[in-house]
Length: 262
Length: 262
Image 1 (cartoon, each protein chain N blue to C red):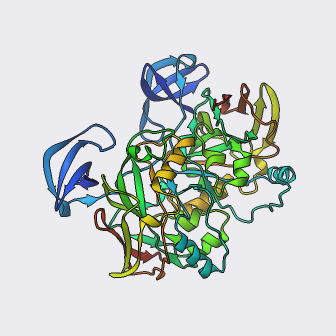
Image 2: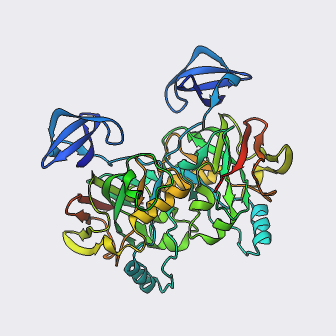
Image 3: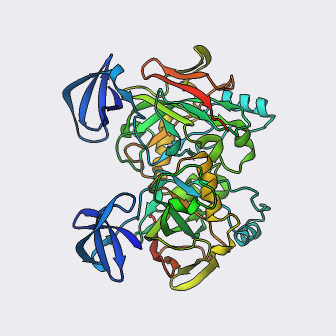
């Protein structure tokens, strides 16, 4: 099932996407819902961020080749993490597919993409075993964990590096029934493939992260767990670029890039 | 004005607190609202977390004496921060005044309080000057930034150290019209004063933090900015304790402590 959140003539609703059509839901996929006979052309709707999370978890370092590449680029010496310690992002930064990524006027740069698989929590859960961890997942979407690399290095926290307004594209849809450990995520910049990797390379599986979080924290419907990125995240993004995070089954998270005027 | 969020017979509503009485609001203090003539005894209501933030900012290091104390305790050598770089906490951890702090069964400890002033954002804001920064603030409440010190030291992020379920008591009420730079915050453990400090000692003012955040991020109604703690945060908390964060004008954020059974 492919769920989306849409706006049409000022009304906001969830729908099920089937090809080029959207069947409006009464209710939301996070709760009781009914598929109605109100049918829209997908192209006639504005696609919104598929959910607004209160708790926005991210795996941070979860692929070896990305850590190796980052060490090479920065002259760093970061080791592979020994534990699945999650970090946080902030919902102010979320934008939908089609919306514009804005590089702040005073960003020293570079600003880079990080294409990620995102698990969307569908129901309240606590203390799940790894075997049961995916039972609380509604489905999967895509995220672009945009990163301002100078601020990432110089600030004490990741606030500006990762959470400026419009730095967290997420979408386009939430797709249920996928195996999160066997998906191909690719990134295109201006139509050209810049990165491609398999989620089978995660250091800590989606199951492990979700189980581990749930040991200490209640997972809530609409919470999201971004699962990290692999490999290099170049070329650097600049005004006028278009960046796409792609998966065959979830779709394309496409966003234009502008640089704010001072 | 003193705003609270309450539950009564399954109904959730905002109210204005006047002495021992609560006047129910139609609407919320974050939006258009009307004071109704529905009046309740405060003691008859369950006090809830005063707002649920999507964006949960925290100052982290914002008082010199706390940094000096932490360095002494841990043998660390952390310098005073040169910039107001905010961190994040996560709403899963919020509990209201009166609710129970739970120390996880596997916490090596110590778990300590951190009594903080919290600015509650009342309206959408972006790019505020320091002079205008407080114009977006609805009012102030109290927070207890509970911290598991072993996890704070050993984990790569602060996820378990700061964000376990029930690790973020906030409340009891949101009070408007206060000067955030001239308040006394005190902490009592089992009725005995454990800490007392003036918010005038902040390294970076509330105005500075809010202005700086708003340079990169849109502030939204209900967002909160926790402004840090000063001094020592002892004694360590244990099963059976009662911890109170107090301010004369905001009230008392009182929470019992239990340790979870393995």
